[in-house]
Length: 427
Ligand SMILES: *Cc1c(COP(=O)(O)O)cnc(C)c1O
Image 1: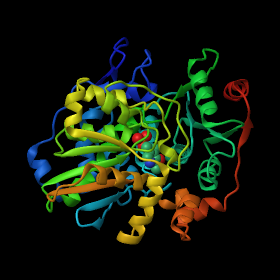
Image 2: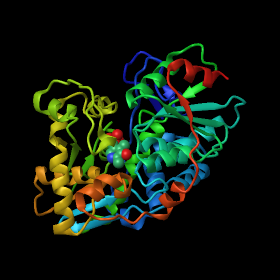
Image 3: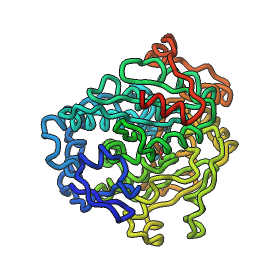
């Protein structure tokens, strides 16, 4: 598979090159050149396949022969070694729980898949690769865990001091080995700016790459979720509708790619908090990014979603075409808290603020009788402990994998400006 840049002024890249570079030299996102739909027989009989077999069929054409099949199967096996249940919470509504992985957020799959690809491609190189990533919470933990002990790869995570939850901080500061946490005296935007400066700085002597959903090896494995969910419900319902809590729009963009390669999905809903750049775009036809506002669903506090350009590409930049299969709605924190309470009292289910936003999206869309609505529960409620406990007046049980990190000792290096980051990277 070849990938072209969405800025159209750099050369096409192999999968390997796209993974190692992260972003094209003209700063465009990589996009697969041509995709071949999966066979109808496969889709019709999907329940007869294991998750590992499905994932292999789905991702194979995107990797091509650049990773030997047996090794690709091994990468998949490790990346999806847990459950992806659709929990039915109402007559025709299900919660796809994507939080059964090691850090309890959906980013675990992409982070593990990408780290294993990067290790494979870099194994013959003497030079180590440094993955540099800024996090506002969940990305850091998933990337740290996914890349832990990966050969030939160092990970440097920048996070804003005092601005991530205790659990999130522990998840990225306690692993050691090839993972270093830099605790930045500032906010998330400062971390992000420093990372950008480092990528553009010719005086940095390390080979750097990024591990956010811009990278095709983190973005594309997210297609698996839609297939795994479809497999569990397609025999009982005629049509399937997905609602995806969206921030950078990587997850939902993977869903649209799943549809492109043949998964018969009726409709997609991108549910957002008050960071509503995409819902406003659909309503007005004018794309006007805004600085992000802080909300209780903080993993979606994104004012300029990086993957939206890929969604437009999938629909040949035709807004009317996109609107036929894709809607996007925005919700306030108050609406989110109210629905969390309602889901608890009426349906006996605990949703985190992100999943609850997804549920609101299904409500706003208005499901028909023959439709099954599935919202993504993108993180375990315990990751947003204070909000969930306060809103629902409950005490959550801390799962074992979280308890374990809470008992570990935090190690971080404090930095307060770009020069300190540069000195760290060059030493
Ligand atoms: C990252 C994240 C999202 C947003 O996903 P995108 O692919 O950036 O749209 C939603 N919920 C949680 C819990 C997340 O960590």
